[in-house]
Image 1 (tube, rainbow, N blue to C red):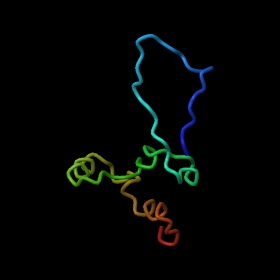
Image 2: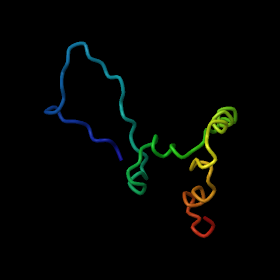
Image 3: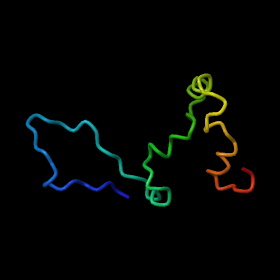
Length: 82
């Protein structure tokens, strides 16, 4: 769901201020996944770009959860092959 907006009683009006960051709406299905946002969903993913992926793989330890096939199977809902 959407991130709730603050009401005016909690907002500060500061002269010459500007918005530096705005939260993106959460995925519609986030309530089924602990209300994760897009950033959180991507934490256990490797980059799609092959060059970025290879650079990252050079620095990751072999125990990194992104490289564990049992964790990947669990994420995919394959409980029998984890």
